[in-house]
Length: 376
Image (cartoon, rainbow, N blue to C red; front, side, top):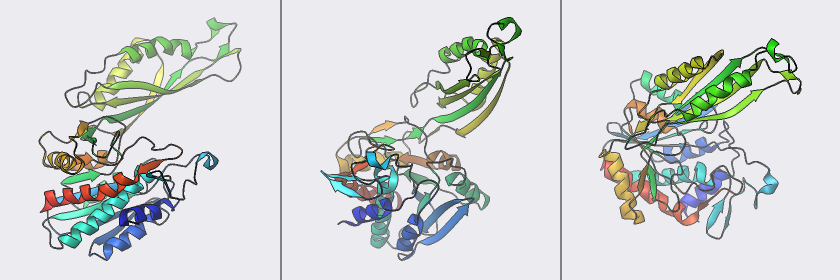
């Protein structure tokens, strides 16, 4: 069994459901320490983070990943046990195989190969891992970056191992991500009997025209790098459970996935203006998960990763800013150029999550080639 497959097996066997690490980080730290990596275990709250570096000067190239996974769901629906790695028909099955223990294993193997071949390489290469990516993400990379900022540490280039490909390894790289702005909207009404609506104010009725306006609003047209900003309601709740009671309150969970064509402050202000224009009595609690970020066209890392995909995978990758968010949103504000490159994402978070064995075998060479082209 190859080193990357063996390590992926070992990681999958560890039930590291967020925010648990289940021993993944010490396992990796021990391997890298033997090659001379400096090891920092950074624990914030109930979250374990690992920062392993080799080299003592700039530029700094960091590989970023997470060891935590989402719950498996009903285990009896899996063809094979979710935390027992199983190979069949060219695929490796197990929770985290694609998201993202396979990428983590490939990063470790790539770093071992690179440092073994270039023990006195220029610059610094690092591996940043957290056990808090799939959860609330408060004490993972977000807090690590705050820690780095306080001590003046920087990252110049960052490769995130999130599963990015559509059909085959190297067919798509993420060159940026949209921002995510969420709001918990409370619409206040007056509870009453449905037979006496004149004595009550139904927050559902009050909110309905405003919701239609919010859904129809052209928030922006996007730009050359990002699609237009989208508005969605993910949950709507009102009522007492009785069919003869007008509710006194409605709570809606809303979300914007927004491009660099808008700002969080502008989206908040415009939302509240629309609500007031429709006479809605409301309160709203905003939460900004992350700003949009983009690796600039012509940036060195963007060009290197694209070239590696062309040379090693035989494909000119699509350069996308689609999808959800990743921990790259915390690294980009440090001034780092951030690119995401990983395996096919077709089965992530699903029952019978899996990764192509061939892609997993090939992935360390891509990461190693990025190290060589950036640092040598």
